[in-house]
Length: 290
Image 1 (cartoon, rainbow, N blue to C red):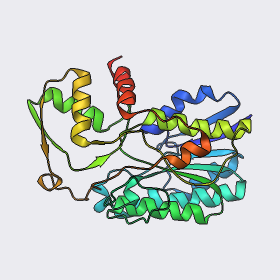
Image 2: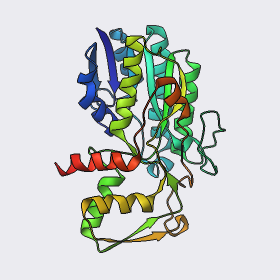
Image 3: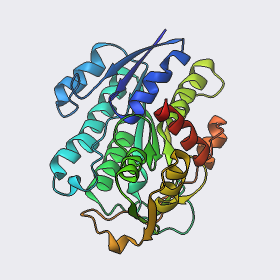
Image 4: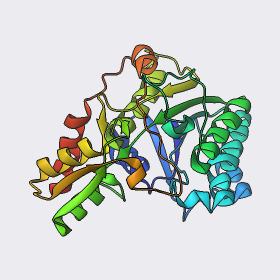
């Protein structure tokens, strides 16, 4: 029986991994939340990882308040950077394999084609910078680590764009939504399934754990405007949606205009079939309705 530690199980992704953990019958899972494991308490974090020999560590915790991070840089760095250094260094000592989730915000969003893993990083937000520094420290830790960059994550659990648009659509007659930022909405359930697939492949011997950086998002491309229209259409919401430009909705942290990720690497190595974003949205909305 293999031991797996999931850090940050109260978030969208951690919640989805927990829901699917029974599918990995040859593993015993331990789940922590920020209440049971404050990752800014580095001694506690180190001791939690070291006290039991974990075979795999899945890190789902992150400081994700993109705008707030601009004024809370120190806290964002503790969670997104320094905690990842501790996880990596401790995992290297205990021989645990790490799967860590990162973000499309490590790029500046000025590309014209889907980003590959080797593309130059150039974050222009505190959130993106701290996530990139976390990636770099994890790679330098000499732990066996997989970094999964993803984008536009949502689920039926927690706070996210999908649930916000449903609420606002029911409360208001009209909404202004940005149309000049493009990416791939990603259902956290699909990302959770991909993570468990990577571990299952390693355990079965069908595909050994291959450390490195990978990109994962749902297939297809949409703007926030397209995404909102699809959400409202599926939920039968009749709110009027007006497309606006980013300049008409200024935020403390600039958003990348282009966040599409190339998934060829993870699909080839791990033989993954990645669902189309609209199909996964339908699945998530069915969960919300029930």
